[in-house]
Every structure is written in structure tokens, then in C-alpha cells.
Length: 81
Image 1 (spheres, rainbow, N blue to C red):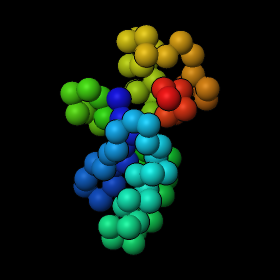
Image 2 (image 1 turned 180 degrees about the vertical axis):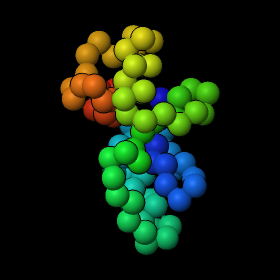
Image 3 (image 1 turned 45 degrees about the vertical axis):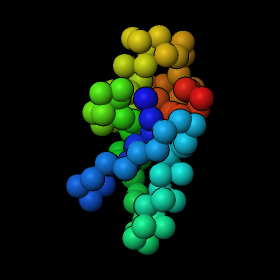
Image 4 (image 1 turned 30 degrees about the horizontal axis):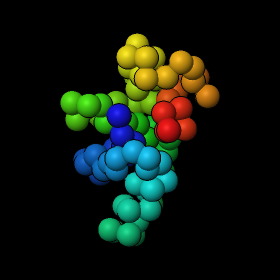
């Protein structure tokens, strides 16, 4: 998985070990737009599908990518790397 932000009809993502804040800074550098809302933060799966934090948590737990979640029921990059 990689961190992703879904906003303005696009999904922006950076590979591990990037955090959501890194993606937000890149978006700011690109168009000086602030993206707000936890609901816009998620992950890209290995197939390139965007999923929200809660769905990503279920996927990561089922795939045994993580044993537990820091802030259940949502997945955070800190859970992965």
C-alpha cells in the first residue's frame, strides 16, 4: 500500500515511506490548494485502487501486513512503516 489523497477528482499518491502530509505538501506545491478532511486520506492498494483508511485497515489486517492498529479502526502510515 501507499499513502494517497483523493481530492478534486484525482488521487495523488507517493510510495512508502511517505506520509499523508508529504502528499499534501506536494499538492500545495503544485497548485497552492489546501486539502482538508480526514475523509480524503486513504491508501492505494497494490492494484492501484483507492481505499479509505477504514477499508485499508481491513485489507492490511487480512493480508497480515499489520498485527494491530495504532488508531483502530483506521489505518495510518505509522501502522505500516
